[in-house]
Length: 317
Image 1 (cartoon, rainbow, N blue to C red):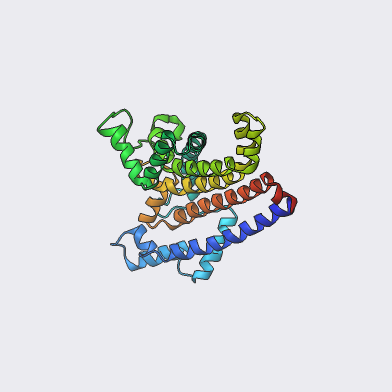
Image 2: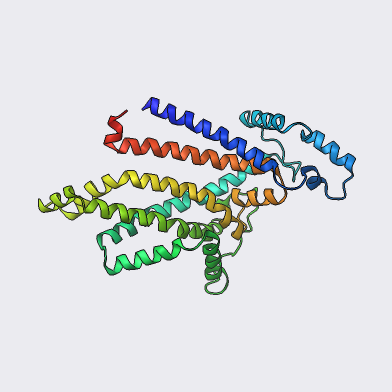
């Protein structure tokens, strides 16, 4: 197991290195001039050239990448170009906590709910409940995150109930837990976006497991249905569930970009959109690498858990 984890971590480091190269060169390829974006279009050529020298933009691209990578590994993310008085760490740190609040709350709600819905649909396969759940899931799967977020705003914040704020009034320097009512609609939109995929997985996996010979044999021997489901069904569907849960968590780290933008929620997603529009490259690069690192770590953790839950894979170690 130690060799497995070490191998996965080494693979993850290689992946992050490749991602860092792609992130740096793709952000450098964004249209426009950083110095001009910071100083404005009326800046003199001398001022632009002086700022480029201060920012280290007058060197070769390879030199800039190596310098950026060294600072990144050393924890020095530099200062924001759009807000020269703020460090990238201070911007990303507070926003990351707010986005983490969304991901955690969404996971706590979506995973148990998807399990209950998927299990219910599997046990009532072909029945009314299965039809209702499967149809609802297909409708939600067809809708992008931003469309779901707009529907949530219309339903709960404008025309129907008008009980919750349509947009966040939270200051980026404040914690989302200081105004928990601002979390309700973004979390609801993310839950509705993540729920259908996990529900479909639970339903499909449970149907496959419940139709196996050992489950049929257990039923013929008088094993209670509840024990069949909990002892046989869930045990054999745990590994696929972990894999899909990992995909959902990674999906949430990307889905927050659209949802946070719709609700003006001060998280990593909104900060990324704002940084791209302002061509604030240090912030764009830091957020992208943070999301990529989270995705790679989740994949590694998922692989390890799946191997531990699968006897055939575990015996091959």
